[in-house]
Length: 329
Image 1 (spheres, one colour):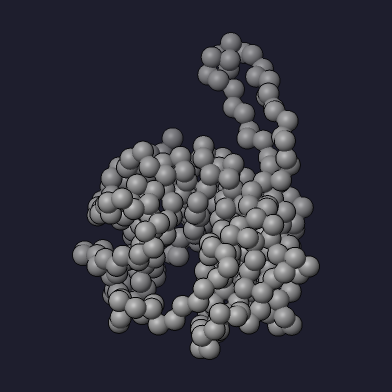
Image 2: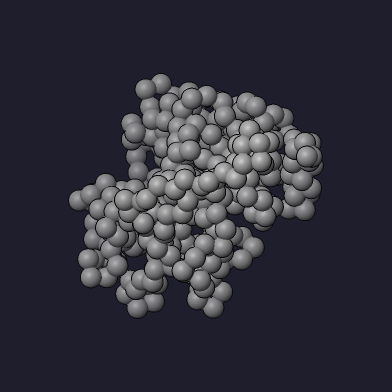
């Protein structure tokens, strides 16, 4: 699509299976990676519109056995730009396009037990709380989303169907570096702040968005405006304190930490639409959202953009907003 012509797409192709993830390459913007519901990953060149992809994964070349829920191109130093995918088959996979479509599994997600905290009554009575752990039917955890650290591209976060967040390293695929517990439903999206490299947001089916600091195991702030699953979120690329969310009830919400952590500053409801994705435009105060009606809606935001501030000034604004919203213990 081009915003110059919202009536008809520049290019389209028909696939044999539902499309579940998309990502354009940063180095070669004409390359479009596509993830499918059947687990296949394919690379298309939009300069030569055709139904047949340049490259695709097959059953013998690393194809996922479950839907691909997110794709991301990541610049990884000497490795160059790699494509990363995550699937509910539990694999986080890196794809190289230098010699065909070669794959390496960065992590096979495993289930971990949530740390149990003794109740206040048990602690007061001096009792030792026994952690009751249930046996897992499957040791494999289902991956839903991920995001690479802007500070260190060896570090990434994964969000799982269990509601847990795991910090992982590309150079260490046997164990998590850290786990964050707090959500009670599947994670649909996770994203690092583009201005503060230690902060990230997570969106869940438990109706909430949570703000986390990498060094703290508990969420700093929980945002909840209703009783609908939060299907997607994104930080504003130009305003450090602003992020947007969409819900399964059709609500598009824009939040600003400097104004309120209790309710969004802007909201719009699309009737009879289950929204699933949100995208900020980097060059203008425009936000897009899409849902199960097959349409992409385009909105202009008023009073949200900060076009003339530096990254340092935006970081300072975010730190000031954080300090005013967090009560020290």
